[in-house]
Image 1 (cartoon, rainbow, N blue to C red):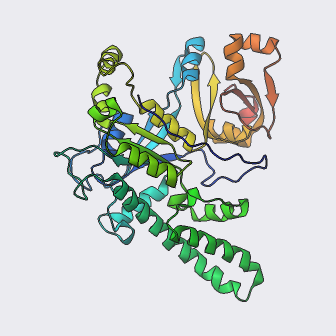
Image 2: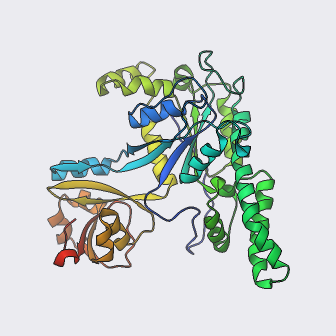
Image 3: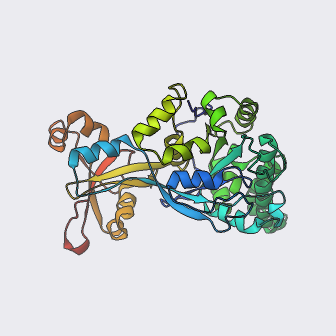
Length: 398
């Protein structure tokens, strides 16, 4: 069965730690890799929408975009309880980005366009091919995932180095005469040395001030990455392939905090067109331990972007709202409608776990778990919220 291989993160202190990346709720994952590694096929399966996935490098020039349903048992339970007229699940926005090639940072292939598309996403699914198929040509001639990884990572790092050096040049120049510029110049030099040594920004250890400066650069190698190892159906169902262990070990050593998910796009393509019973029968035929990796892939993307889900529930609608971790109640209100943030009064909140444990809203209130929160409240994953605001002269139950 598929495994999501994660290394344990080092313990951090209680002090709030600045996070690399954009602070916003509209966050996107992009699928990247060399041509013909299974990117567009994965996108098709994830979204059940068809984009060009022919066996030809550069067939995907503009990024294809889709909202992928986020599997969430909490949402399913809430729909059962409220039986609403309308139901809207949480989603993850995913872009299919055309394949990079060696030299992309200097414009080879369609390099510049691809790199700008990668810059526009907030997290990366890096698709790595370890399946052999004579009908699907490999742009580099043969299967070697470690070489492929180096090609992609070098291209992205070179682009980041170019951008960092350009931003650093005037600061370093001024720092000779202006002592106030020296701390910033030192930070730029540290970033450049880190990347020139062959490291990604996401794998460095940075102070809050360094993270603030990095967030003005929005570097590609600062983005969280989930490594997806694409295997043949035969190899995936056995969890055996001569490249699997080597690739996993290489990634765990180089990117210790990044998830690694082996999967088979060929098997997922088979499953996606089947009814649930038929799909279960197919997976059972491989020995009973084989499962689809799609839910795991989507959930890992959601976590990598530090997204939480809060819910609005009622007879009219049950809806799951993606929001950036650490957002305040007014910011959550603003995801429902921008006016709600400006005119926020308060939020009535109960935790999903409390509703599930007690069975209904009245029971949650009777045990004192239904509460009112103000503007400084930080929304928790799984909060069920009713937003009160004064737009139009009255509160709005949402």
